[in-house]
Length: 136
Image 1 (cartoon, rainbow, N blue to C red):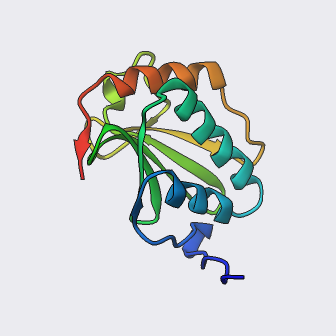
Image 2 (tube, rainbow, N blue to C red):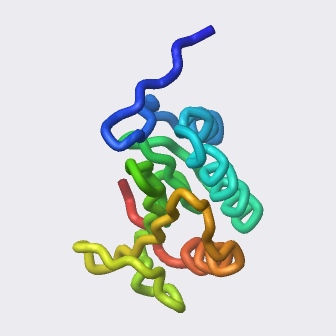
Image 3 (tube, helix red, strand yellow):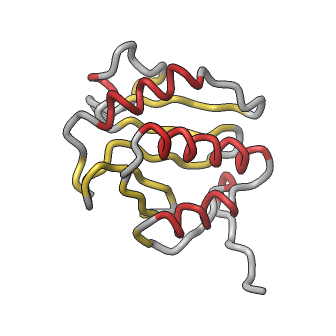
């Protein structure tokens, strides 16, 4: 059995870069505690809403896009919450709640109770997937 991925500061899994669903599922499986269930839920909503979503793990975070190498969102584990980033979040309606230092980026923070408005999240994903993505 391979060793479990190392958790970085704040509890973010250290997962090798990779393209496709397999590295994203490895990341989700390595998410600590309550974050694993939420990560699975986020991935399921994205996969259902954008059936042909491109997936990758870069910089120890799952990324989602509609074309190879162009991304509309990602998420990352912190000690007390999951930070979900919409790269063109300033163009979403209504705006995701958390601002960024980067002009177009908006965030959704999900805390330990795991509660978030799933219908609103799905709508944001639908909107974000139709906007120009970010090359990274």
